[in-house]
Image (tube, rainbow, N blue to C red):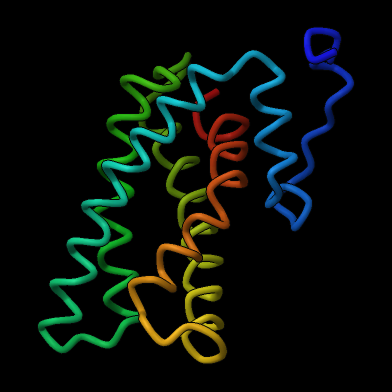
Length: 154
């Protein structure tokens, strides 16, 4: 029964392949975070729209997909931090600057994994770069949520 899962029995490892599964989302939701996870997904959708828009504009301007992805990611991270801090997780005790640094570190790690997965998809399996980007980002969403909740806003 989901209500019987105790927080103390759920060990959250550092970012790893284990966190990148739908089981991670199930754990987050079982821990009573369905509302927070929904807000995180809504913020992620808004940041993704900004990201993909910037990514597409840079691609149309002739920028290679990897630097275009990195530049668009930085803009999306700033938006993501502001909205998640205000609405999803709330800014916690301590300075906002400390939380911003932790959030940035998480997002850069997730961003690096996303770019690596994007490159893998583009060079091996998916002809359309935008589709590959959506697949890469969606695959890492559970890990992003758990890391952000655990280390980004505490």
